[in-house]
Length: 385
Image (cartoon, rainbow, N blue to C red; front, side, top):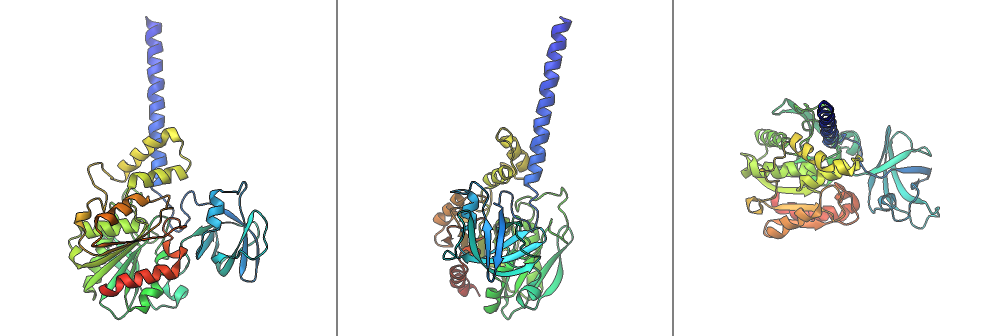
């Protein structure tokens, strides 16, 4: 009897230990999924290798096997992108199809090397972030560095002044920094719209969230609310919220939950995260989470981020919308699924304009077709100015 009891106890202890290990591993992976590093490519972004550079061009070598794989698709994307590596940043334009190249190499227009050098062998990634620095150094736009009061402490922001009294508050998303919205600053400035470009909790120079994790907009939206209060205090009569990825999610949260929602005249949402369950799975999978652990990881991440089952995600109630919304999104987005965006647009055709952008990764709708993007933006913003 003692032997059987001891054996049962040992088995129970082993099972408890294994269960605890699974929970610990799930929590660790969940925390990793909730900590995208600002200013670095999102997990799972394909890496390419610099083969050579020449006047106005860069040749990029694809990992083998290349045929039909994600690196091939990434390297052939149309448009304008940042080229990122540790200590290196460049800007590339379209593929130069008429330039001779090897079967595992693609040649793109090289528009600028803004930091470091593209030495052969450097492993790089295409990213939506085209500009480095600040509005003055990167774009020649005068701006003020400000710290606006937030719930957790001062929030750094750039303010680019202009003539109108409708301000645009820009909010970056996953893996980005406040440098990302600089892609549309020249356009907004041409049309006289002041821009308040926000760094929120967890960003460099901003307060950390109490648990050190990102919450996919569930808590961060309150920093957008603080930016609205600042804008109205210092001269704005109305604001337009313009967000990418989880920044778009924050904008929707603010439109639905802020006491100042009546002063928001419109929303521009690029690649909005409207289904946090799928986004968390994508982030965890990109960090090589084993498939058997995935359900534990997603549940742990939802709990850690405060994404409760009883709380509806932003945009889940189309009837709650009270202002015009322009959404740029792509069916090829693997981080924020296209389905919820399409359903929101179909439910409120009176308020929501959906611009589908193909061949573009998450948060890179402008990059895929800048001119078309800005023309769509102009038509939407003109009545709101």
